[in-house]
Amino acid sequence: MESQRVAVIIEDDTDIRDLLHAVLQQSGFEVHASPNGSEGVEAVRRHNPAVVTLDLGLPDIDGFEVIRQLRQFSDAYIVMLTARAEELDTLMGLEAGADDYVTKPFRPRELRARISAMLRRPRTTAEPVAGQGVPGAAVPAQVPAMVPSAEEGVYRHNGLVLDSGTRSTEIGGRQIALTRTEFDLLQALLSGGRRVRTKPDLVRRLRGEEYDTGSYISDADERTIEVHVGNLRRKLGDDSRAPRWLETVRGVGYRLAPEQG
Image 1 (cartoon, rainbow, N blue to C red):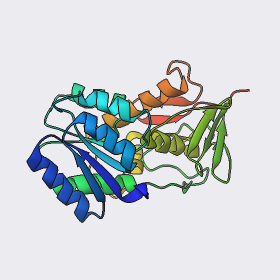
Image 2: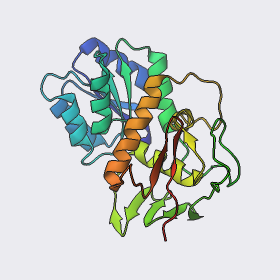
Image 3: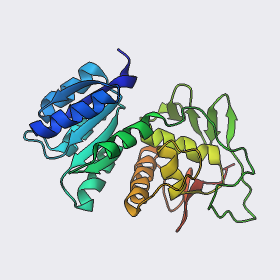
Image 4: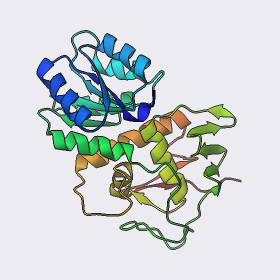
């Protein structure tokens, strides 16, 4: 079964579950729905979906625990659906491995747009060549816009190897398990080299927008990028104070750390 057009809904509210089913089915997905976390985890294991919508307020298993369990075997895009407005819940979900979130009550059009953006993310290295700036990114003149060595979509930088063809990442021969969103962000930063990738630029990258189309980017969108970069650093074993791979440019965004000898 091709996971590209399969979706799993994990939602205990019947009305919302039916609405999600209709929205996803109209978007061309084969949809499987579960009323609780335990059944939802098994549905994801059985159907290998591309997208999972997850209610955090489930009757049996905490939604954050569901995310952690799913990330042990699935790289599906996970979209949290929650009535909780507190930022802490959102951050906890993203830190556990979710990709995005939508607050209830949600608009079907917004949900479709977010899922469509995930599925149209570039899977190849269609990035500007070295020397071409990123709109809105200030790069100090003394810093060369060097891109790590890349051949046929394979990037190498300070012992890290990312293969965009197999969507695999390793350090010193050790495989690093990344979510799809984490992989896409790392690839964007590798392909940008020492050029600064602003947070809005990275938000657009995750939406599948090649250029600045003027779409609205909120503080929450930028905060989501921060959490995903934090997850990346943790999985890579990188130190933000003495980075080997991901360097923060305060108030702007991120870029690769310098090459090490």
